[in-house]
Amino acid sequence: MKCNEIRELMPDLAAGLNAVTPEMKTHLDSCAECAGKLEAFRQTMSLLDEWQAPEPSPYFDVRLRARLREELQKQASGFLQWLRRPALAISFAVLMVVSVTLVRFTGSGSKHGPQQIASVPAEPGTAVGDLQALDKNHDLYSDFDVLDDLTVQQDVTANP
Amino acid sequence: MHKYQQMDYRQIADVLKLSESATKSLLFRAYETLREQLKEFI
Image 1 (cartoon, each protein chain N blue to C red):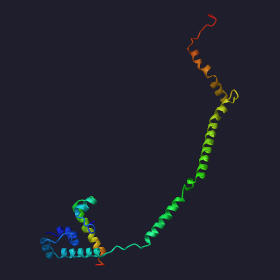
Image 2 (image 1 turned 180 degrees about the vertical axis):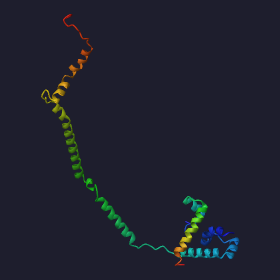
Image 3 (image 1 turned 45 degrees about the vertical axis):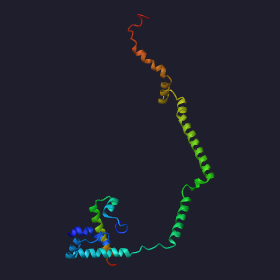
Image 4 (image 1 turned 135 degrees about the vertical axis):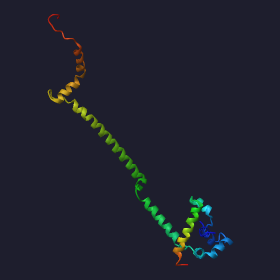
């Protein structure tokens, strides 16, 4: 048996899960390093067997529960807690409805603004006045294209 | 798992999703590290 093979089995040997076979014993007798390692493993295992996990203080549970209650109360009195009160929640809802209504009315009023400005007659000859005239007489000016299709009569007096 | 739950290499390898040889190697190194850490108490 080789050193690598026996070292793989050392945790089981030291923990007592496997017994030392004659083949292993032969190797351990001839290899001081493996024998020393196995002995060290056994000592580590026995130390782990002796070790006792410390029990928590009897007041630990009491203190833990108290802290949990404190944290729960902190969260409850925190953000959005005021919304749980009905009067405040209703007030908030009414305020939101009034705000939305005001915003909508103000928004629709601003939509009519440009139309009212456009309906104010501008002085003729100005740029605004010309644009308003074009807009007002759009139907009339659109028919002007028909005139382009007419043939020009050279002698007006020949055929009145 | 090995020491306190007496699980064998195959079971530990399944839990850790490792090969059996990797588990053996890791376990050996873990015990070595533990021995180094605890040598002043031995």
